Length: 414
Image 1 (spheres, rainbow, N blue to C red):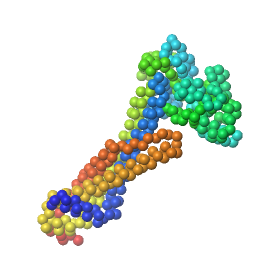
Image 2: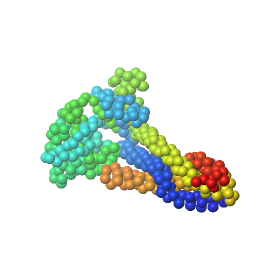
Image 3: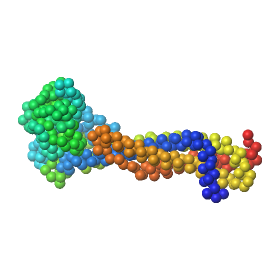
Image 4: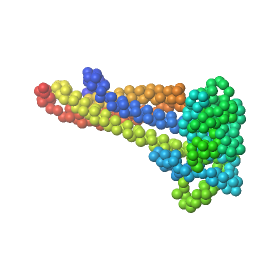
């Protein structure tokens, strides 16, 4: 029997039972579509985060509390660690400890909304230094001024807001000099940042900055920081500065064994590698979970093919009676299974590409994220390969069962 005739016969067999064929490949379509979607979103998230990190500057070093996370499950510990305190900041400021450090900013994240005369908005509110933010991201007040070091020392109730925050609370009215409420406490708006948009991990238009001392004392009631960001005089001195920072903090925390550090230092390059590792691990994990659907779909293919073999017993007997060999019958049913699952793979690739594009478009349109659409070619090739293999592997037993039928018994089957 020629290949062309085998393909034609297999196609007719599938076309005869359209509903059953459609339901058979449904599991394949769902499984491969999910893998493509997961990998596309994973690549998009990785590109977004890496682009944001690269915008922070090669001369920037971040110090975070807790031990360095080795995987996704360890990330939460940095949110609850209290190992970075004002003493550490003072020691890092000393030139004798860290010679190449030129600026430093403790960071606190202040959850919750802010309000003005009944208008409420939820920006990203942080305790920090407005002057550091201005210098690091090259953004300056479009209105008013920045609060300074004296305001930080005095724990002043002042705030600098982004342009979007001003529009949400004040419309087109002047904001400078007005008082807004953060966690029930009044803060005087001293400046509004010029329109800037997303830079690194911050959307500067959607930011509200208060002195970190004020955030500690009056908003959060804590004596530690969520992060400390430092700036080095030259990118070439980053490696040397990392060593100085680690030595200073270990001395401050009375740590002699580096394996027991209660802090970790992240440079731009280290952050890139860490993010790649974490997102890669998450993508592999989620893809592995989704792959289980393909196994289930394969069992479904085998069951349907077994039913098909039983229903077409007379057809098998008739074909054998006119000269078809066991090999011809085996090849026909195996080809039907491979065509069925291969078609499912093609449909899944088209559907996966469409859904991935829809997710990327939606995130870009309705959020402030610059989400880049990426189509994972490797996932598409993997989908076609896996779906075809599923058809061959799980179609082999039904096809072999059909090929072993006796023509006499098959013709007499009711």
